[in-house]
Image (spheres, one colour):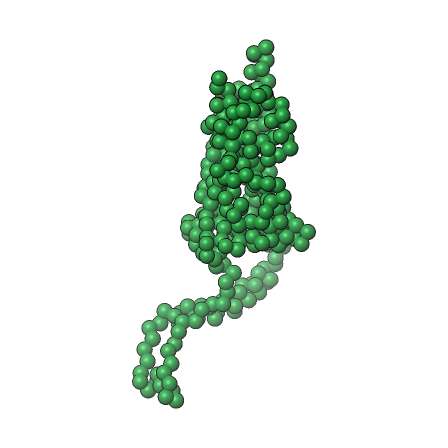
Length: 307
């Protein structure tokens, strides 16, 4: 009976890990905003004369800005006769381009959520357990692929909160590696989740969830900026889940479901966050149920089985 229980436990763990891996993979692939398939297909049909016409048009638009840049670098020397016109003195100032499309988000109250490698690292660890230990090679390659991709994305994707907006940036572009100064344009367009840039007004968020408080794996929010009837967004937790939760709790509107305070995060609140979790909680025996609040992180799970 004990061996059957162990085998059932292994099967349940493998099935749950596979489900989480597939979910995370789908979500992250949907948010891989550097794969601009639409733009690639369009550019393949652009003829050479049209391309030359676009280059000429861009050159005309950029000429004033280029002239202003050269003017700003020239030393300003004026004489008494040239600097006085009708009894007034004039000073030349460098011209500045009026374009603000590539400017970074306002630094007012800017908070950058730091990276967290636990999700990607956990999937890589499960992959090596499934492969070399259990010889489940298809599952090994699946977990290794998704875990590696998550780990790579963790190195460059950053969430930022200002007083009024949430945006997502990449820190590996030519603009530099500073998450505070890089522009929203670095992450491209969100082609697969409504289009437009990866920047949303906090006032436009109508609902948000995190699965699960204390054990964050996936975050969701819905906003009406992209679409008037609401556009959902899903992101795997490849950043500090607790800091992300704190910012969402403080700056986004109320969620449709009651959210526990960050200091109250534990396995009990995590199970209470979803209908499935509540059903699991009902099936647990009294001893394990009493220990749920003591489990505040993945490292504490062993406490459930201690006598």
